[in-house]
Image 1 (spheres, rainbow, N blue to C red):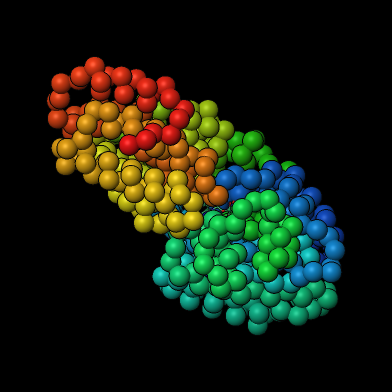
Image 2 (tube, rainbow, N blue to C red):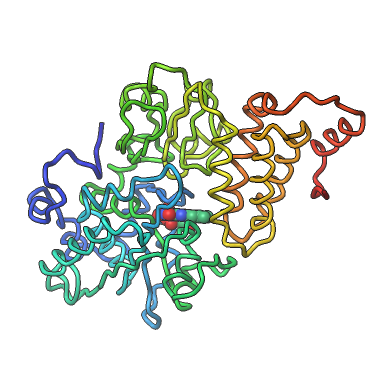
Length: 436
Ligand SMILES: Cc1cc2nc3c(=O)[nH]c(=O)nc-3n(C[C@H](O)[C@H](O)[C@H](O)COP(=O)(O)O)c2cc1C
């Protein structure tokens, strides 16, 4: 199994060990032998897609940056990582920080950027301290700063600590946060490459995305494009949590069967129990049934084909004893709490979802609440400035659609009057917002 980031080399986080094993050779190669455009071309050839959740092609994103030197340009490295079930970027800061730093330097060279910010959630002080130390090491060795490796190329990397808001992982809220403003997402267009930090061209990339770049430059984009699934190549850092015997972060090729990850790498479900539900890519992704888990491969196209998505590759496994209503309350509470409040459907709707789910859990639900929950979800989805609304809506909508009986059994049997029947029917078929 190919390892690109979490290599099994002792002390790989130390700069000398990293250098002894080919570290910073990609930077040397790029600065001395390649033009910035050639670096971007190689990344395009690799077909690397962003690891922050949206799977956008990285090389293509880099080409959106204007070439001129009339304005400052910025790179924002997204290490906010605040979604429940996602914990893989921290592993890179801990196990292979220099490969990430080298990736940032290559991105800056390719796009003519002189300043990169690494945005890390403030509570993650352990990883902030690690990265700060590693950046200083790289500065001392002349890999960052002025006239890098005597080539005339100069660039700086700074850490920016977030204040602990999930919304600040959204790229435009992240930029507002760096600017010292409230973390509200911006309306797009204009996109960051045209109008980003302080109105200047900006690219935002996830930490894992950037950590892949040095090996792409060392081995060539074609080499990378042949690893795993052709349409979504490379490896992914799967952060597996929940009811498995060996939770943790596993670097595996895209296209690895999900059941293999659970049974072979993670030692199976705890207590030898059966699987009830698995969330494949962080808490916002539509969940999978046991039948889907048995056959799906872990790459974006395979998951899309069954109505889900790879997201952050944060896999949450739930066994047969899991109370899905309680799970959904936890997830809904998270999004309700983290909604920034800018868009009405998200600000109000996340609270409605939470309150209805609690009502069902307390045995006070009505059978029509299930369709009402789906209806409210669908009225949040696609109607907000950023995708936090979708992230709040999808788990509710799809857990109820796929596991309806789990919810029905908590609802007291009530005589279904013709009025209720009509309401359920109209909710199921209506596109109109529900008026309570
Ligand atoms: C609410 C919300 C939170 C997000 N949080 C993160 C995050 O913590 N880290 C991340 O890389 N991307 C996050 N994203 C996605 C970013 O907006 C953006 O797509 C990503 O950083 C781009 O990097 P990539 O192209 O390398 O994947 C989030 C998106 C939304 C809507």
